[in-house]
Length: 149
Ligand code: RB5
Image 1: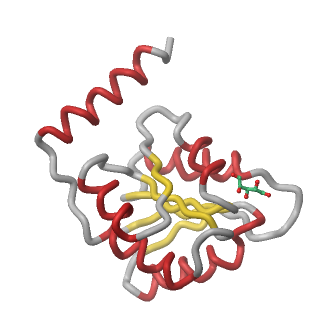
Image 2: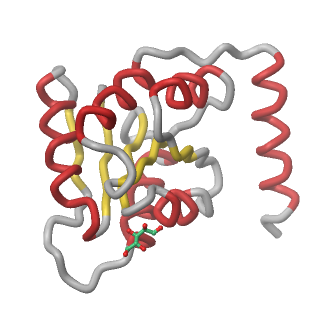
């Protein structure tokens, strides 16, 4: 798979670990930064990964900041993005199966590197179940359209 990854200054080390892990599994990882601990904002990297996902240049995105929250909120402002913060593998599986999340996010100040690997594994091994869940995902898209005027 081709995966875009982005992070802020709080998550540079965990991003490197997860990037290497994803590559070790045979994935191609597009690293959109940040790789330097300068005055950088999670908003920039959340948007950058979201753009790659909606353009279908990658299969999905991974975002990491201190909590996973700020960077996912930023990404979720891009129409078509369903970024989900996950702190455990069960949530990571269900956000794919039920919500068809196209970005998973987590916090470098919340989860350790082994938990983060389990989270990406659970997400990648899951499949969107469609059916009633597709109806709800479509309803989310309808809300987005309603407020995108
Ligand atoms: C940066 O200090 C921190 O606010 C950021 O990484 C993230 O946790 C925001 O949601």
